[in-house]
Amino acid sequence: MSIIQVRRPLPGPKGAALLQQWHQYEADVVGYQAPVVWESARGCVVTDVDGNRFVDWTSGVLVTNVGHCHPYLVEQTQAATARLLNNYECANVPRIEAARRLVQALPDHLDRCFFLTTGSEAIDAASRLMKRRSGQFEIISFEGAFHGRTSACASLGGLAGPKRGYGPTVPGVIRVPFPNPYRDPYGWCDEAPHFSQYFATMEAIVRANSAGSLAGVIVEPYQGAAGFIFPPDGWLKRLEQWIRSHGLLFTLDEVQASYGRTGTMWAMEHEQLTPDIVAIGKAIGCGVPVSAVAATADVFSCLQPGEMSSTLGGNPVASAAVCAVLDIYERENLVQKAAAMGAYLKRRLQQIAARCPYLGDVRGQGMVMGLEFVHDKGSKQPAPELIKPLINHCAEEGLLVGAVGIDGNVIRVAPPLVLTEQEADESLAALERALARLA
Image 1: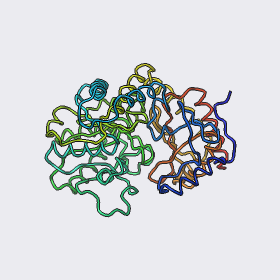
Image 2: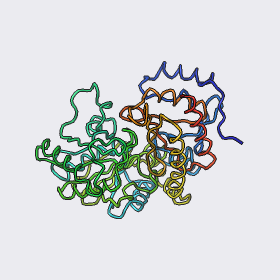
Image 3: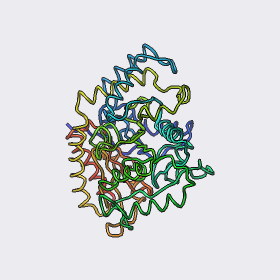
């Protein structure tokens, strides 16, 4: 029996009425999504209010790695809700257990954590830690980076969108280029493992812009919002060496890259990175709002009691979710499954790209990939005008996708890690049907 079941057109009658009501009362400020009103979801399958069934390639923006509404996660968080909802900074049993479990799941050098609520909070805490521990205020970040939407996080980011129209940003951020193997006019991705030309350029930019108060560097293992851009192999390790040679703190933003998404539990494991600070979010709660900042005891030692807090951080329900999610990973071998299924998806997507004149690049690692659409593969000119129709066509064929990219021309491939082979095959067939409708 087919998993995908869609009656056109979309939205259906119930969905159309609800969308109209939604836009009547809530500000219409979110990004474009397929005109589908979700009613329920389980695993990788979403059912809308009109009874249509879709395979989800978004994971709620890389959140629901264990699948939507995993029964064990639902059970554990419901039980926690019945016992205790909130006690602010007072100790509670789930929080203590969550801290122990998270630290044990992290690479050995990271021996402390602190719980917050959103990825932006975790990034803000990480940037404050860098400044507080170093006594300096300048942070090096990367063009194309996305670290959140608060003023401080948007300032760290290298995208114009979150900053446009809001006036001056927080000072002290020095932005340097992020290498993109698909678009590399300056040869920054060549000369591995030293990347001499890239780091000479980076050094010159930092030297020209620093006031002599460098605190550290923040980087994503791959740039999600910029279009799922993965740096060349070995570049992150070379960056870490550069950071250490300059005596700076190293922060890795794993908010969306962690919890098996790239085929290892932590993206830092691919190149054996040892960051001083790590920001964690999204899949740590798999739909329950929770985030964390992890670091060494030495880094956290700069803070006095009360210097870091979060109203809902470490609440009992979120903490129960942290533990439940880790249980699921251990029981279901999700990291290994993500690596295997990711390789299968990538191989199939590359075959599709070979037949599609508009699909210029398939890139990624594990269960996170970007499909970059161009006018033609020779010029690589971005084709953002294809994306909205493609999102709609995909939904009508039974596949939910979202768009990213500096030019808005990239479709993200990031299903829950529990994707089955049947779900993969049906969703790939749906993508091919949608692409055929672009012609």
